Length: 299
Image 1 (tube, rainbow, N blue to C red):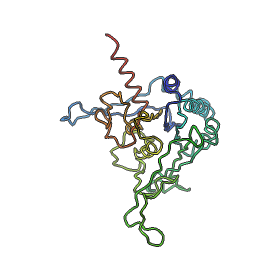
Image 2: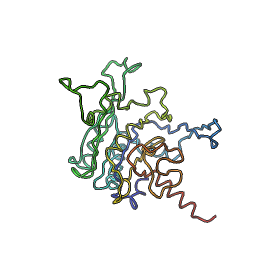
Image 3: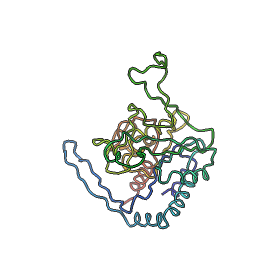
Image 4: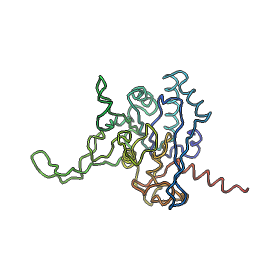
């Protein structure tokens, strides 16, 4: 998909978030639900999406030589993402301990070591159950590598966590600032709402993907690295090329010429009310472009 985006979007994407698959296994099947067409109907339709031949071949091509072939694929992907990124754009690469160290070397080579901004550690949540039985340090974090196209000229909106009730500064004084500045270790405070969906048994966000990330995590990234639109420029463009249901696409609004189902404020379709900086999703744009072209073809 990425090469097909270059003619229209090269140098135009303001924010990229990727959670690339790593040794996920050849089973790409998943369950999906279709909400009822009638608001008064409580019955939903569920079906299992089986892996296609293309998905099976892509898995074999990526993992045919183990880590070597994966890193080759990751390098080629990173080069394309670098071409798509705007000059003041940012990219966040979400990884775990199995591949993160290798991926950083690749990203340093593609984006440049000067454009590496932060290694963000996301504390997944509280420790309980089978995890506590490990005869080792308990694994409880993922890594998000933050790079930019330019080493110093990039969009960044500083974020704060509201002071918890009863919070006092050293010496007992009451704080008057905007809140606690967010550092590069995320999930330390309950108020952040960044607990992993897999830990929360009854999360309404769950879509059946074992590596699904909470919306609050993506919302934080979008708020930090996109601009609020003004009369001088359009909403920023966001790309999540490995997105599944409830990825970045549910947290941004579509372009001004968006389809009715993806209008500003989440006025239709499966999009929730707008909660983040207004932005555009390439996934939504591509769907709109395809539907527009299809509707313009005479039967």
